[in-house]
Length: 120
Image (cartoon, rainbow, N blue to C red; front, side, top):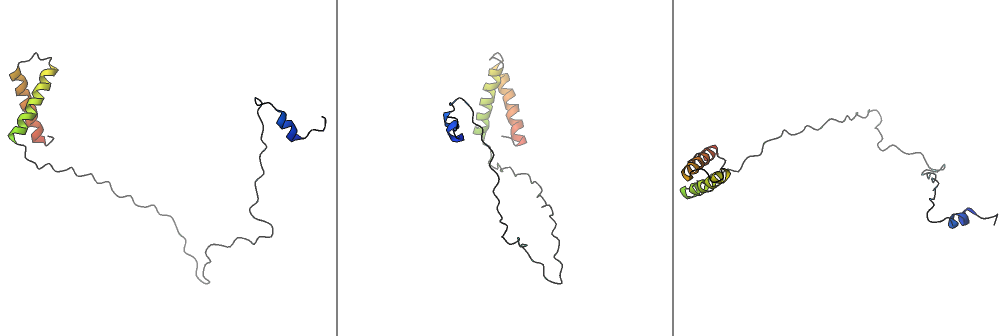
C-alpha cells in the first residue's frame, strides 16, 4: 500500500480527525484575448465633462407631532367618576387609615389640577 493516492488516504481518516482544506485559487474573469474595458461615458469633443461632487442632502428639520385635540367637554359625571377612582387610590396608598373625606378632598384637587393642565 505504498502507492496510495491522496484521495484514498483521506477516505481512511476517521471521523474524529479534522480535515484541512486547501484554498482554491481565484478564477480569472478576464482572459488575455479580451478587449480592454470601455469607459461608461464618453466626454464630447471640445467640452470638458463637468465634475460631479457629492453634496450632502439637507435633512428636514424635525417637527414635533401635534397632540390630538381633546375638545370633548368633561361632564360632571365624568369628573365625579375620576374623583371617585382617585380617592380610592389615595385611601389605598395610606392603608385606608385616612378619613374618607380627606381622601375625597385630595382627589378633587388632584383631578381639578389635571383638568386645568389638559392632561385628563
